[in-house]
Length: 202
Image 1 (cartoon, rainbow, N blue to C red):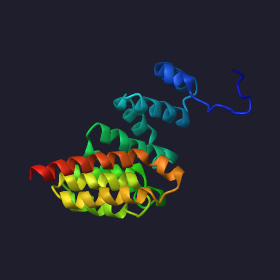
Image 2: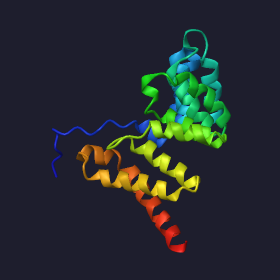
Image 3: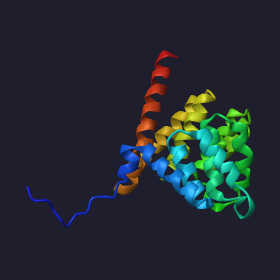
Image 4: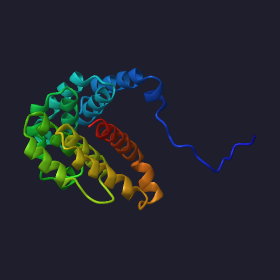
């Protein structure tokens, strides 16, 4: 079989897939050789991706100084790291610093902020944040998370409506949009099955 030379395979970071430890060691060496803000953050990102969350947090915190004291990427990554550690009280003040940035509105950090408000017993504020992330034919991840929030609050009918709306919109999206959001549709379908099972036993 002759390979089609006209089609180029997507570039994959083989080093990271086969041996994530090798990638981390290389980045650690780069920091030792050239201790710059960019190199430190790349290392912290690799630590976070590898589940070495404490190491990532330490670097992120130490990097927020001088001209980089309010670096958006580092603060957003800190939100992810603290959330993973269950340190929700640490997430909230950092998120408030990013809150007025236009890109924060539909970001992963915003979702984690809303969930952190919920997990620190600020339920009303949490729901307000989830509502800000709603929108038809889009924003499926935050809407799915809002549905979970409603389920945790015992508001099964409201959650059912959220998940049902998501799935009803699926047919009206472009193939690219459907593909990029298919994980959220699958998760919404799973939640509807769980809610249906609860209805049957009620």
